[in-house]
Length: 185
Image 1 (tube, rainbow, N blue to C red):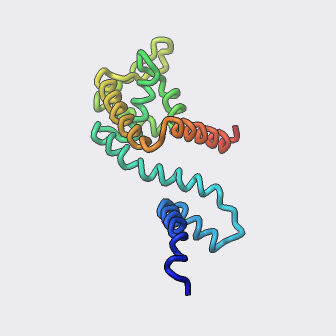
Image 2: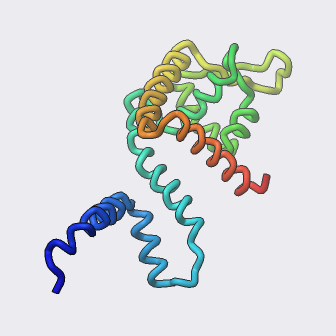
Image 3: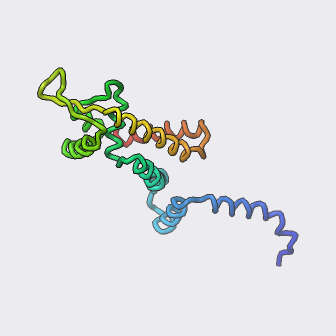
């Protein structure tokens, strides 16, 4: 039997092991279970992608709540944001919009109908092609998207405030690299 004194030097190691175990997140615990159950299977992709999925799940609710407070859904926000980012005169052709948003033309039409009914956009015949239409922000639409975007950026900045500027920049760079690699670029 060991004396009480012989266990004292081990205490700092035990404390460190407990802190490490407590620092593990849901993904670490799930991957440890998979490693135990299927030891020959490589699961390193899940270490990153499972965390990315959790980030989306954790952030989606607050981000969408911000949009609701501004009277928008995510699809409507995307349309207004694309128009605002385009710069003056804050107008794009529907084709430019649906290609930049990666949605179908039918999906875009429904969004445009709702936004136009709300007075946030208007559709006008294009000056350079009478067969074409330009979608433009109204002053009310510009005010709404700017307010929603400002509030959204405050929220998102708060969400990443646990990272230093250097860590945030490194993470953004690594995510950009991973996205490019997954697209085959």
